Length: 297
Image (cartoon, rainbow, N blue to C red; front, side, top):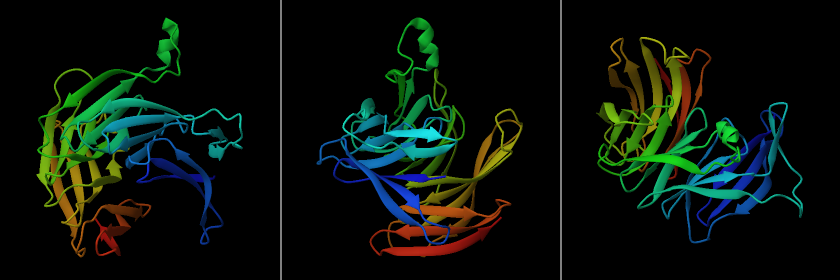
C-alpha cells in the first residue's frame, strides 16, 4: 500500500508526498503541489476524510474551513494511487464549509464523513453537516457537499478551540488555549452539553486517541478512552476518559512528560499490540527538542 502524506504550508498551498522504499529505508517522493489559496494565507491544519480518500479538509488563517475535493487520487484494491496528472485533469474543487471570526485552528471529520467539526481563535466550536447520497432521491447532485446545516457553540470554551477528537457522531473531545480538555455532547439538533472537563496546566494543542475499550462502545453501558495530549508549555499528558453505567463522564491524568523547555505542539505514539504501553515521540518548538519516552498502564 502506498501512503500519501499531505503537508500544510504557510503560503496557501498543500503539498502531497508518497512514502516509498523498503521498511527501514523509507523516503518521501513529491507527488503534487496545489496552490489553492493566496500566498498570504496560512494553512493551519488539515485532515483526511476517512470515508472518502478524495476529500481533504483544511483550516486557514483567514478563518475559513474548506473542503478540498478531487485531489487527483483513485483507490485501487484499498490503496491510494495518484493519477497521472496532465492537461485534462479535473481541477481540485474547494468549498467553504464555515468561517470563523478569527484564525481557524483545527478541524475533524465526523466518523461517518458527513460532517466537519472546526475550532477557532474566536473560542467557538462549529459543525458543518453535508448532504448525503440520499439527496439523489430528490433530484439533487449526490456529489454536492454544500453545507445544509451548521451550528455554533460559543459558551463552553473560554479561549480558542485548538484540538478536536470525535469519539462518535455526537460525542467529541476538545482542547483549548484555556488549558482544558473537555468531553461534549453535540447533537445535530438541540443544546450542546459539557459532560466533563479537566485542567491540564497548558493549552491543549493536539489530541490523539491511543486506545478505547470496548472497540464498539456506543451501545455499551461503560467505556474508556486513553488519549495523548500535547499541552504547549505544560508538555505532554496521557489521560483516560471514562463513561460510567449512568453515562457520567470523568477525566483522569495517567502520566505527565515535562522535559520540554518550550511549546509542545506535536506528539505521536507507536502503541504495543496490547494497547496498554507504547513509545511516544514528543516535540517542542523554540528549543527544537525531540524526546522519545515510554508509558505503561
